[in-house]
Image (spheres, rainbow, N blue to C red):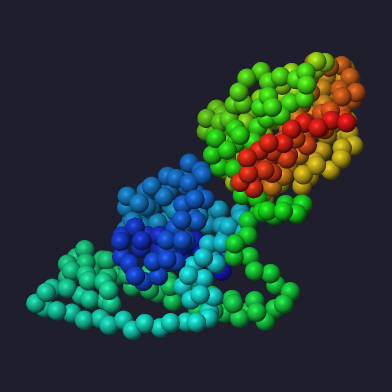
Length: 355
């Protein structure tokens, strides 16, 4: 199911839950899907706005369109997230196509009570009641559609030995180990950044790491840019380091921004720079020495991406940055290791290891 279709179905499910109809009719599926969507979209201002509007106006076509648009973009950007949402709905609906239980639902009306009974639901005959009835029918139709789709999908998976299920996976990375989840809160991002305990002897931090959202940073918000950015200044015996970390919502967004041109522009560096050979760090990495037009060496910059996080380390206040390359690489490895630990849900505790 493509991102737009899935977003339409999921929006209707969430809207149905918001109107308090459909209780007992696939509630587990709807609540799990709603939890996944709210958890993901809650990490961005655009997503929170769309969810809040739908909660306030669950029957509004405009509110549903707004959420559907934001959700479709998120599903398209992150196929693993889309697989989790789709898998949660189909898995909770028909238990992966096995041990299917069919319940009889009877519909009856009573002119005396003025109510309509649908299984465990009792709906009053009124304009609001008929609206609720319509929403319940929509929920039932969606669950039937998901059930049919889920059954076909399970049969396809079982008939294809080379196909791996993706119902509960998240963004993979180059190494082995737990899958990586995006870092979406300021506290988690700040914890990923190095404190004094992560630094080698003779080094100190200028203060607490500073973490801001895209809107707080004071520059135009880039839809494909990082949700959070953090920076800290470190000082050693012979030179200083500026360390920056960018936390994206998806690995695809992080990878798209990880390129020489954007990194050079981010440090206001012109094209008078020389690439340096750097041991592969994280999913991808690069390094270069910055030259001014007069060819005076002013600094060295390294960058590495691991999953949804990009680390950048710039050395300054040294005329011969290449002499400190090995140590700067060690700071970069430490940054990547802490970023990986944060995305694994662990407490970041990696330190700079030199030599």
